[in-house]
Image (cartoon, rainbow, N blue to C red):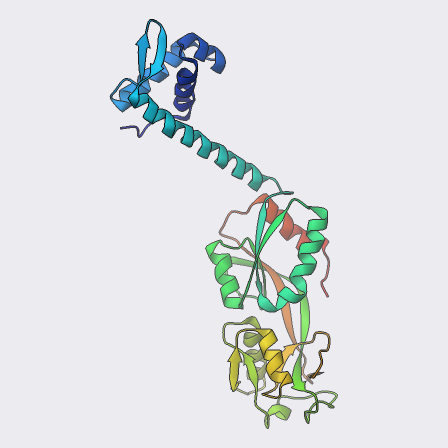
Amino acid sequence: MMGHMRIDEIAHFRALAAEGHLALAAQSLGVSQSTLSRSLARLEAEAGVELLDRRRGHLELNQYGEILLAHAARAEMELENARARIAALRDPAAGIVSIAYVSSFGGWLIPRVVSEYRALFPDIRFVLRGGTADTVLDALREGSADVAFLSPDPRDPEIDWHPLTAERLVLGVPLGHPLAEREHVTVDDLAPYELVSLRPGSGLRHIADAYFSAHGVVMAPVIEVTELATLRALVRDGVGVALIPDTPAEPGLVAVPLTDEATRVIGLARNRTRSESAAAAQFARFVREELGPLE
């Protein structure tokens, strides 16, 4: 049974197989012949068979040795791959950073951050994954994301969440809606109208629910969707009104300010319980300390 094979024994055996002579193999490795001889003896004892046939001072692989050599070559290749991956993890200017983010940030925040960072570190590669706040948080917890852009604060002891910026929320209504010309609206003003919303589990829905709850109202949307783009389209087509981020105006949709301001605070989240690559750690420092306030 080969359960106790050592890395140096693999290298010794491969050298013996290549050189076919104890002295030449010892010279190529820079070790003594006695060290090499003991290493081969240990391997053969573990295998329970001779791996090299001795022919007048010359060593030749036999059928057992050929099997071991094939596996030894693959083992050394795997070790080299492991060393390369470890080196990449230790290099802050290279490697891969996996980012999870709330889908609505994909149209403005993520492209800006990624482009500015790659201008400084062009060898960095990114893997980007958008989703709801719940799925983003799950990706961070399970380790499929190194960092996450998330709103609101998950208030999880395992998650470090650092606020970066805030988006003002407004009431989205279609062009020509009775509230479209108002300077601002209250929660009471919305009572006659049907609401549409993102589904529970999204960060924006959590914030909207909290906003209405603070005003003594239980939010009861007539339609729930998974994407902000779909929500805006429903508002634009007159299906209902919705709380949405105050982004640049789009045709057919009017943003009406709220009397009692509501905001969506966006933060950078990291998992305190998982080790972090040098590339991910440097990216997080860049976002938190060097990029400055995001607008």
